[in-house]
Length: 418
Image 1 (spheres, rainbow, N blue to C red):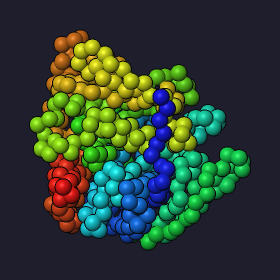
Image 2: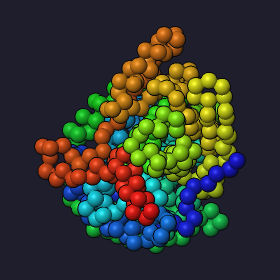
Image 3: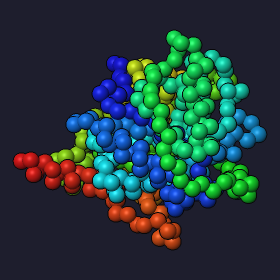
């Protein structure tokens, strides 16, 4: 079975943002990016048609001085800083959408997807073959600009760095042979904000934070993932962030992202269960989102094969979505607190939220009992509007990042129609 990304009939735009402020906080991100994000989100909303969702891809140029350092790449070494930047950006997007009454949820006004744009060209670490690309959610400009993703508009920020990024993006596309050039699009420059330059002391601080040096080729995460929202997207992006990209010297390395998705039977007592998405709907949304931030192939080539398995015992319902470069997204129906982390020995890392931190400890206890190595556990930030000591207003955007609140709203909508 071959599957493709959702793009037909939808507005698809790209916003390229310059380097974040040196002091990465909600307040500084708001000052730097709110004007451009507000305009891009508003225009994406205006492009939405009845029953269709506009998609806004955001590529945040991000200085990651720890990646790579003294040798081959190691995604775990930059996890803390990378996921923090993504969390801040999703938080700002949620605030803007709350203020502007823009619906962020799946199959509504705007579907936002964030990737990081490396400001160091890594072509020297890859083969020159066009079939080898950097794996999202960290990409370089070559990968982004050579993408066949059908953006109808590419936004940049009105600043010296913003203009340089746009010209680099356009120049790389123009250098391609005619038969390899992606689809045409329009460009638009948006108002920029205030960005404080990155200091040398901050670079040193980031370098000192690189305490993780383990390579992970099989990473797992678990959740319900009902009505995919910004919190889910951050969690899934952080999971993809942990997976090592395919390097030229490891071109036979099999890699997997294992997504444990709560089975329907465990959710029947949830609030507003009548508007819960089915397991198949939830796994499809998860796969589509992950594929969108990982693969920049042609949409029809992003997932080249999907295989469904029904095995006896726990975690028996599995769908394997095979992407290019030996990467498989494994969506597993879970029926207990452990999921595939105690049935798949190959998994080496687990991404958790603050709410599921204790679950990571329980998983490692069970793995020790089986004589297996423990998983390296990585925690993801919370998507919010900044801490109370910051100048950012505490927006009431709970419904943007709560599946229960989303179901409540859908339930009310269905009841009104009835």
